[in-house]
Amino acid sequence: MSVIKQFSLLAEYNKVMNQRQYDAASKLSETDLCEDKGAFFKSVLGTLNHIIVGDIIRLKRFAKYSSGSESLSYIHELDKPDSLDSILFIEFCELRKVREKIDEIIITWIESLDEIDMGKCISYTNMAGKLFNKPFASLINHLFMHQVHHRGQVTTLLSQYGVNFGETDLIEIISDCSA
Image (cartoon, rainbow, N blue to C red; front, side, top):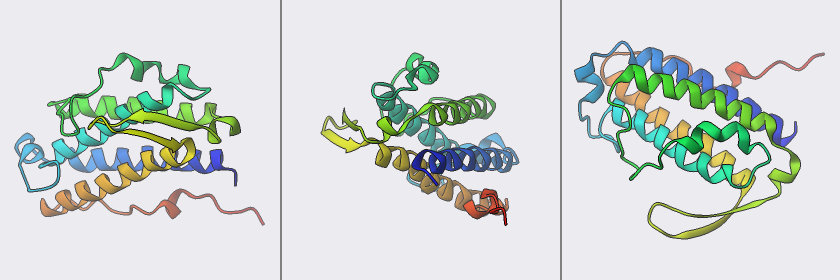
């Protein structure tokens, strides 16, 4: 499987897991969504916001270097978050709409990439002002792993409220090989 096809699989997995997570989180009250449970980003809502903050920051970086940057035009329109713990959306339903939109953008963007993109390096400055020069493909992988990491935290928070998230394994969406 090519690197781009692998990233397409991860983009689809990302979308499916985000949909499931938002479905599960929608069972919580507004108070529960915002309750500080001592997680890195305090609450379910805070952690879900952080995932979007990370996506916006990373996708803005990718937009400067990839052949499919026109598919990231919506991301260009968004302000860069001020900090990693920014609460961009207080209303869960609005947060969910943006999550769904960004997931579709990621899928479209990944499909627009080519092998030339995969060989590039990206120079960027992080939120602390430190300069980095990293491989493009590795940073795409980081985009997905960042979400997996924090979705795991949200899943733990949901379980503390008695909400069973269910299956999270990638294997669930991997197609069988034809015999």
